[in-house]
Length: 392
Ligand code: FES
Ligand SMILES: [Fe+2]
Image (tube, rainbow, N blue to C red):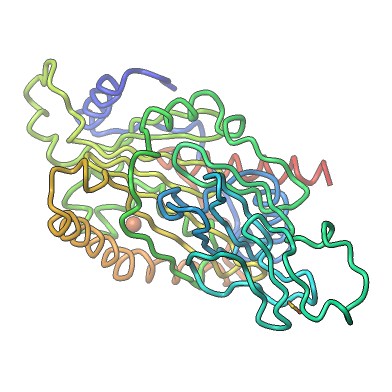
């Protein structure tokens, strides 16, 4: 596998693959079974040994721009509140009142001066400490320091907010990314961009079926003949495996003008999409003028359900050279196209895959050598599960 060539060289390699009508390939064709997408025991192990052990992205920092901005997220193991602190830092807590367990905050996002439980009105500061016990002259002795919200390990890095879904874990995003992917993300300066649109979709489909579809350069012309298939080449990927995370460049059809002609020193950025797979559950797409982040989370109990979130991350209006109205219009148009492809083309197909996997006699299935990023996703999730099972 070729690693760490300069970007223009990697794009030229993708062009060469296109000229030769081929793609980078993985070592072997790999069989897999339907149970990987339906087994409740495996689903529990994934929640604990993957999401309970390693960092995954829950938001872009610009979604919590000001102190006391918060958002809530259903993680695979915990209901979570993420809050921007007074000093600009980030903290995450289990979204649960320490009195009798009512859910503390049910709005998706907002700004708070404190969190107040609707049941008996105990309240908590944004740093999680217990602020007030109502009628405390009757409640009895409580060590308040011990009764703050339960904190989860959380870190902001490369513009994203990352979380390990386990109060007993620690977090080190740089270490998790490894030197290659950490440097790649640092180079994108994603912290200077703005999340202009975001949405979540609850789907009756296993999270790995969902994640797989958004690492797949093989289905494009078949599943998206009139949309993405018109823009991007199918099954041509210049691929790099970083051992845990990976990325690949896929040429856009506009690159065809260079099929015969030598591009020389021409900057070819605008002719490709670069896909990054960030283990365990994110696809970061680098488009010529913006980024798109797709994340996939298992349901808290049902292996046949998951939530996908999509974010459009773009240069802020001040740097765009556009009026705010125009900027909004441009990204809204882009967003509507993305939503239409998801709802009309990907989701129906993937729901049906999940239905198919429920067949008692599904037999085994295959992941091809051309399905490189899917191979990495499967290899690495299996590795995490194996490591987790040894540890526990
Ligand atoms: S459960 Fe929250 S105050 Fe009682
Ligand atoms: Fe698709």
